[in-house]
Image (cartoon, rainbow, N blue to C red; front, side, top):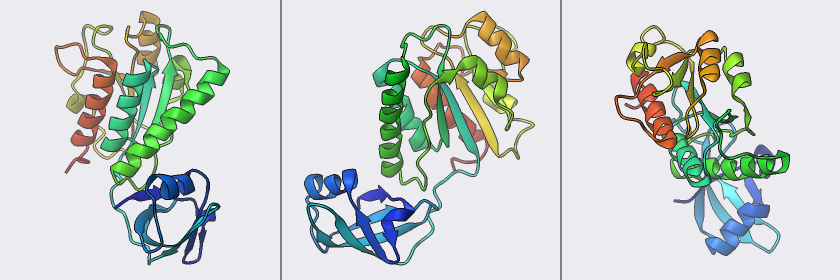
Amino acid sequence: MKRLFVSDDEVHGDRLLLGGSRLHYLRNVLRAKPGDRFMVVRENGEQQLATIRQVTAEVVSATLAAPQPLDTEPPIRITLFQAVIKHKPMSLLIQKCVELGVSAIVPLVTERTVVRLGPSRRAAKQQRWQQVATEAARQSERAHVPPVSEPVEFSQAASSWKAGPGLLFAEREVPAGRLTVAEALKDHRTCRQVAVFVGPEGGLTDSEIELALRHGLAPVTLGPRILRAETAAIVGCALVLYELGCMQ
């Protein structure tokens, strides 16, 4: 059954009125007609069955059934701080990390970031990345769409994270003293938030590593092999969720 995320201002009692891109999706892509049903996910994380009453050129009108809880969100919030990488790998890692259960994604600009974005391109990229996250959340039956922010500087993100343990996946840059994910989280089993930091294709610089360690990020290994940035992000987030009991 198809699923759509809706805002509260589109719900009027037991009636749902959809226009814009959702109207286009239902009317022109799905060829929806009166009597067809789909599931909507509300801003509070509840889901409701919607039965289409009318489809016009301006709006889709539907009747909503009683709300039901949607218990698909992990109890631990993971914020992925990911250095901007090339378009297709970046979209892939956003898609897969949202499917896994990541709560928010913050793209980073680092000293070795290959993809350089001006102000106008940053906004356009953010909108595209957010659309990828929305589609992945819909497909994986998430109760909420993880926000994807516009890119921020690595130094700003690394120095400002204070909400919980921060894990820095850096294989080449920290040759010694790295922890496994299990070791890094050993004393944080009851934490509510975790940050995962992943660098760009060329890795982080020595000065960025020094700054990150100075601000309390823990250098973490994913094994003896060098992983691509998108692979490290997906595997790292999956291991954090597993270690904190969110994959059962």
